[in-house]
Length: 271
Image (cartoon, rainbow, N blue to C red; front, side):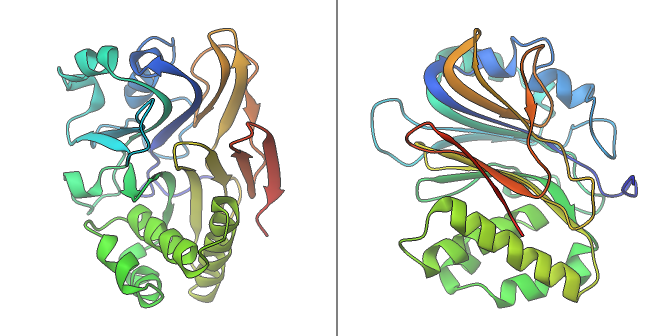
């Protein structure tokens, strides 16, 4: 199945491991996120990702809230980014390049990563006919705190708000379990309103990386992971598309793949 052309797909990237300069992920690989912005290989719809981008990262030594840098320019045309990525180093990085659904505004409020407290969140996927299908049902489920997080108009940010709402409702819940419950709720809402939804997601708090590959109708947007590659020892890289030749493993569809603080891998089904 190929989604209709108006459901466009972004590219996402996550990194957890030894501190590195950001340019080693964004620029140096042969199929880096920069290349994927204008020459993606595995998008189910659309041809380029030119509607803005964002990067999030954590301080190497201090327990602080994450930092973000966003721009509505295509990632290849931001002349400041090469200099910033040679300077910034981190052991936990998330990034997104955007292919906006027609009708969605190209502005900073719609650029990922989205963040709350120590959380960073990136999403690749869609909710079919979002404004007329799940826009109101999702908002009706949110606490005031989660509701007030929403600054833009994307389905991605509403899924993040739904995740924060789930996470806050059970203070002792793990990020992994909160993501699973969020996607179960999304599946229930999509089924009830007879629309398609997909959610390839990466979430981090700076110490762990929780990801999902989910869709109500297969195939799900792609997600790969790579561990302890010679170029990135003692590290895990998550990406919509492999960045270079290596032992990339495709995450199973409709599952959650996690790298915990113990750096152990865990895979569990969503439904």
